Length: 71
Image 1 (spheres, rainbow, N blue to C red):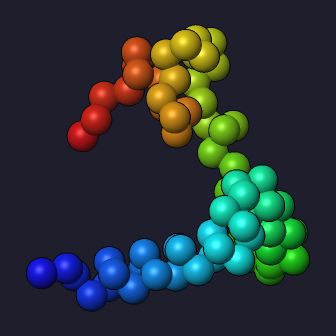
Image 2 (image 1 turned 90 degrees about the vertical axis):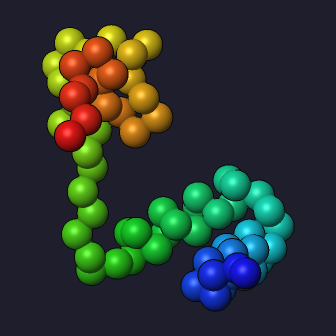
Image 3 (image 1 turned 135 degrees about the vertical axis):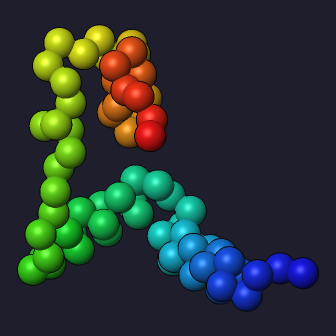
């Protein structure tokens, strides 16, 4: 049994991807335009990276795996 919410999210995701020809660059451009025209606050977490972090130890989100202790 597939969760209805997950199924709906996948349908929306697929529709948005199709709308942009499954082109990640076009999708990112759309998101950047939406971000600029939004009144919502956008937070850039890159500034919170630890100073002196080695880029080789950063995970995809930017957490330094050498110093990061998950809760």
